[in-house]
Amino acid sequence: MSDDLARAARDLVRGLDRAALASLLPADGSGEGTGWPYASLVLVAVDHDLSPILLLSDLAEHSKAIAGDGRVSLLFDGTHGLDQPLTGPRVTLVGRAGRASDDRLRRRFLARHPDAGMYAGFRDFAFYRVTVERAHLVAGFGKIRWLSAAELLGEAAADGLDAAEPGIVAHMNEDHADAVQLYARKLLGRAGDGWRMTGIDAEGIDLRYGGEIARLPFDAPLTAPAQARGVLVDLVRRARAK
Image 1 (tube, rainbow, N blue to C red):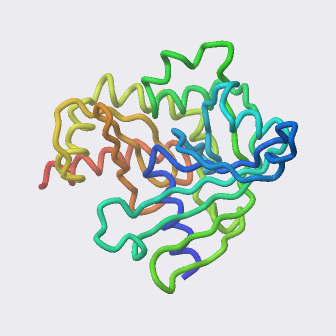
Image 2: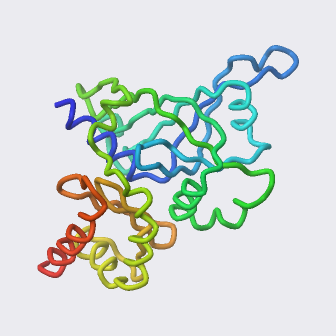
């Protein structure tokens, strides 16, 4: 059951491109701001180890808060469209945020949010990585659990896939755009012509069309980058069979 809940949490986090970020406001001179939690909407991508990646302005309240105290939490809400939202899934990741200068994280975020490229290079914007320490999953009534970082990730990472990802994504978009379209239309039932792959991790691929995103999970996690080709080819076969 714990493995199932961890997979549910990962699928939810990887399937969303925004979250509510909460941080602790710094002192404002009067003492009123010290320790007060502050939450607002942020765009987010996640790394292969499920670490959230953020792009924040230095003027943002969160940036000021993180500079003084890196402890944050991120709520990923999967209840949209439900008649009874409290029966739906949501997960809160708890961890510590810090500035990140890794170009790979930058590429992964901008692949997820291409419009952010318009301001990502400004000197008063910076990327942040959140090191997850634990997660609180509410998968519906009676399905509530705290998960450690190790429990959350489990075996859902393929060594070397992070380095191979840009090449795989570029190859699919440039040489097999028809396959990506089949994934979206036939396997996920999404409308629109012009879907693109934005990422691949051990458990699935991420797609985007305009402002819409989609997640196509694999039946079983990849354990090595070399397995990606076979899985992607098999997904095309299944899509064409539909």
